Image (cartoon, rainbow, N blue to C red):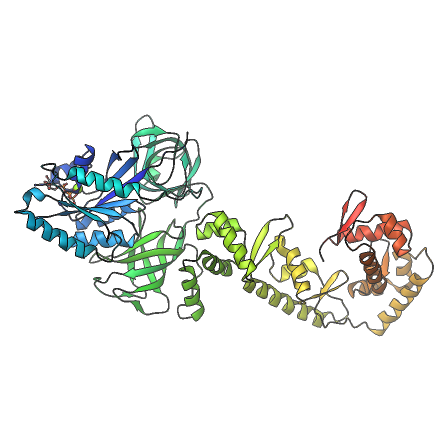
Length: 630
Ligand SMILES: Nc1nc2c(ncn2[C@@H]2O[C@H](COP(=O)(O)OP(=O)(O)OP(=O)(O)O)[C@@H](O)[C@H]2O)c(=O)[nH]1
Ligand SMILES: [Mg+2]
């Protein structure tokens, strides 16, 4: 069964302005669930109802409380909704939580909505309603609801309800489908037990399709579970596509461990974080500037957590201004790039501002460095390639998959943007030994090269007689990950950072200095090997010049050891290699062909080629060998 498209709508507005009654008028369900809400006649927590557009599209409605004491509950419900129904009662008009809810809707980037000018049965005359409509229009200016229709209604008389339904249907119908990134996550806003079924969590599903039977994880608690059943719109379903209100029946976890603010995600998809980079805007009517080191309450989806604000590149962000911050959270949360957050002052409580997560796993930045500013600006850019370049610079290297995950964008789009970076030389792409394509930042390559050069300088100083370092050992010492070692060596050679000295890598200027004793030993060995074959074995040579000299000549790269019993002087080895490359520049060649070209016995030719295979210079396929990159 394909998952049907669904929509989510949230209410907003000042206490007692008629949100819940309007939801009831639209859907037949009064969203207040708690006995205390009935007694007090006000919403305290989130309420839920289902509605359908005329074309049958199911709409989940989240009804929020308007009282200022319950703003945290309101915030837990309005994340990721497709549209908002802002309710303003015409008898009272614009009130403090009208403004605050509107500011939150705007900070959360909820892109569309409808304004219900309600309780019109209480208005003395039509001009009163028109005046309220004008006030609201002025209030909405410059917000994400600036274009919202304002519909006069009365839940009491039913007047205007059809117009309200039509306006909501228009707005919800025009909402673009939510991206399915294959990474479903549900911001849990309620957890309870259904007798006979067990734990159930509800929330708004985003970023991917959730299916019955799927293995899932509850974060940040780190609990593994399985989706036993799914409901949306009050009906059991096999799968739900984003965005949708969903109830998930879980197996494998205890209800006591489940609560609002947790996330339901796929196993190994998210890592909780206590540090976030964000771009935030301080509300122009905020009580004061958001200062460096301020303690704030961060609302992220249904979660809330205390945090300390590090203002990057400034002492404070003043009311009406936008700035970059790093938030140090008191407890881990789950966040993905692009997630919206709201910052509130803990006491006296007030909404300070909010913004968007730019990087959920940043390093600690230096507050005043120009590099930090440039990095944050790049992270905040609209252009995906610029964002990926900034993330790649932090990470050093990564696959398209990993970088797409960090940027929280589709892999295909990320790959395309990364290839564009490669095409414009802002990144390079290497292949791992297993053939995976890895994107590498130029800065990272420079860092590896610098470390390799420093390491080789020290090595040459310490062992002047030796040719250089083993390639693997050098790559490791430079900090190159094993999977990229070979690619790095290839590029370091191509860029002239290092040169090959036989089996070793050396700095370009390095000439091994053989002490006189070793020079004499080498001359003897060369003479022995210059004579007609059969050439003396390693054992014979060892007997002639001694173990220590033989060892030192091998280390110096003056001799190349092809096998346990065969060594050749460097000069001859290099000449053989050059001759083979010249004779077979592209095409595969056999042992028989190689021995003809080199004029050596079959045994020698075979020993040489097996050595080349071992060094990764050639690869054997059947009887033939082909050159690998060098
Ligand atoms: N006269 C009149 N009264 C209304 C209308 N709509 C709601 N009311 C009354 O206004 C009061 C508050 O309505 P609710 O729907 O609970 O208000 P709310 O916005 O949900 O309030 P909170 O959830 O506490 O923020 C109730 O007594 C309703 O009966 C209307 O259109 N006309
Ligand atoms: Mg209510």
